Length: 286
Image (cartoon, rainbow, N blue to C red; front, side):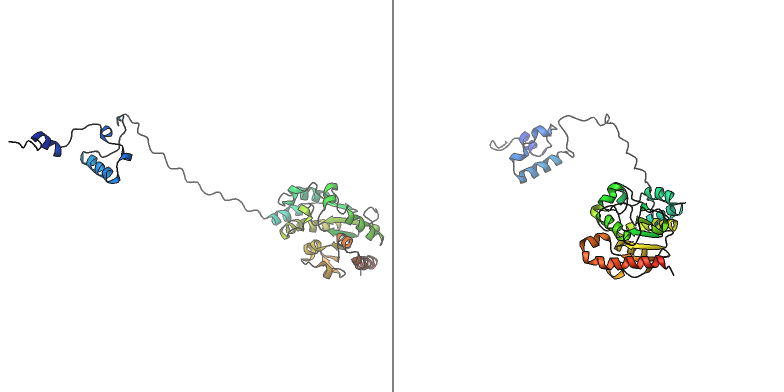
């Protein structure tokens, strides 16, 4: 006889026989309300019952699910290699194509590898008489020159005019013996009037050389450090001034820039000595 206090045969069977398949989601209590060990025991129990994947409340017919073909891998593209351009080589080739001052100005104005061009108002090429015996090579346009499009038109330019007028030379003179021709190493104004960088000077040097060839002066005046660096490869205008050198195959006299003389009036005495040297050279080229 069965023990009245113990479970019956049906109850014993329910303890070890697999339970009939029902909706496990409905049978599963809220995980948040039980502890970790109870949740682990519940998971193991579900796995023993044959639950091997998570399912939703709505059954999914796998035969109706569209099979998506795998996307083809993107085609391998060869890396794009940009052509490296040597701006100095471009400048040399461009300057060599000039046939005169007019075409040189057009070619140089169209040169696009110098960043200074983007920030300047005007292209500053030259002023004065291209038949002059004296060529003044300045540094770069300042604010006034950038606005007007001519070199040496500000306070420094006005002082320059007075200085050379003292030895009988002028940018407005028609006769070559009395005339001046003025240009700069850089035709575009640097930001805040900073000194041109060596790379910028190197780009413009082929144009400067071609410029000197077309003018063919008897004497070149190198006004300031940038001009000396471009023409002589050296700086230190206070050491270089007053001593004749050779630039572009011509006699060259380094001089302190008129802007320096405006700040240091005592240096005008030395500048006057340099002007007398230039006058003597023109009178006796030897």
